[in-house]
Amino acid sequence: NAGVTQTPKFRVLKTGQSMTLLCAQDMNHEYMYWYRQDPGMGLRLIHYSVGEGTTAKGEVPDGYNVSRLKKQNFLLGLESAAPSQTSVYFCASSYGGYTQYFGPGTRLTVL
Amino acid sequence: GQQLNQSPQSMFIQEGEDVSMNCTSSSIFNTWLWYKQDPGEGPVLLIALYKAGELTSNGRLTAQFGITRKDSFLNISASIPSDVGIYFCAGLSGGGADGLTFGKGTHLIIQP
Image 1 (cartoon, one colour):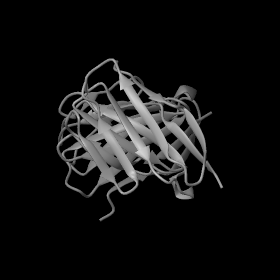
Image 2 (cartoon, each protein chain N blue to C red):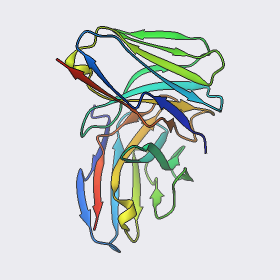
Image 3 (cartoon, each protein chain N blue to C red):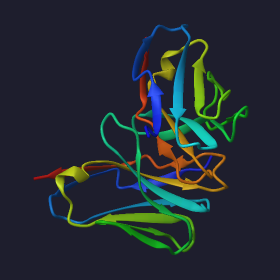
Image 4 (cartoon, one colour):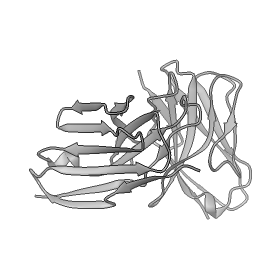
């Protein structure tokens, strides 16, 4: 039982490049979330999903897109990366929307 | 959006001391969660609180859900070196679909 896993762990992009972050969970959770963590800012919600095929915007959704084609996977996409998107990205999942379990994070640098 | 004020921002303590940190909000929350984050890792859940007034312990950790539902505190007794890390409070106002609102963290540093 791996819990929540994230791929890749590290990535460096140039401004304007695109990429997709993958989150996978093996706990059969309905709810999945993407957060970003910046120094001194805590974690802020980007997008979330309450079930397969559904997505919704969080607090800081601009510049990101998401998809939940399978219950166990939640993808975060950056279409045209900007330096302001340099951050650590965390995925989380939960069963009933309460206690959330986090992945190990993806450290993204945009030059 | 909603904001959580977490204090202190950092703590420098001696091993064996007790630690206390808290979170306050101008909004009501239905659930309070406390997480710990080690360097290079994701947050790990320590304690979850679901009812106003609830006091819950997990080993040397004790947390309480404030009666007004606008605050919570976390205490760590007899600190040890592995307690070093960043502690986050997080609140949930609805059924969880909207995600958690996080405090900015308390950085705990223990001096031997």
